[in-house]
Image 1 (cartoon, helix red, strand yellow):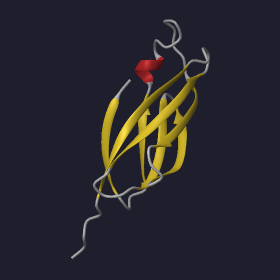
Image 2 (image 1 turned 45 degrees about the vertical axis):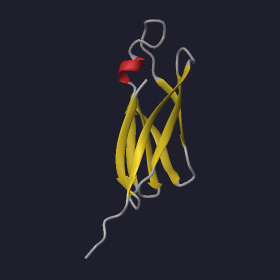
Image 3 (image 1 turned 180 degrees about the vertical axis):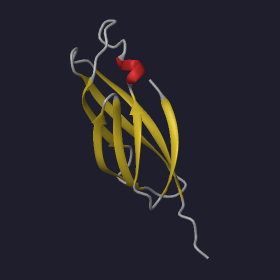
Image 4 (image 1 turned 90 degrees about the vertical axis):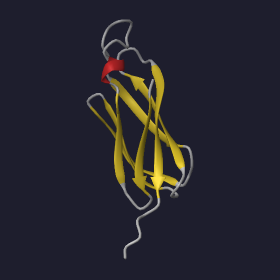
Length: 102
């Protein structure tokens, strides 16, 4: 799977996604498949999962919170439609301290 790292400010409410297109193109014993379910989990309660969705081959999540200077793991557990196979992928979120306004 993949290991991607993104950044956000602590106060930002922002969306991220994992594009599973390449994985799905050959996921069902050589045949294509689609996403049936997608469940996100954060490595800490400091990160709030605001919402999640599946759009085509993309598992999407919107998050808020986090403490500046920390890195959090967001795990995406997904199930495929035809085969019923399940797998896991994740992204990492580096939370930046909010900029100070002069």
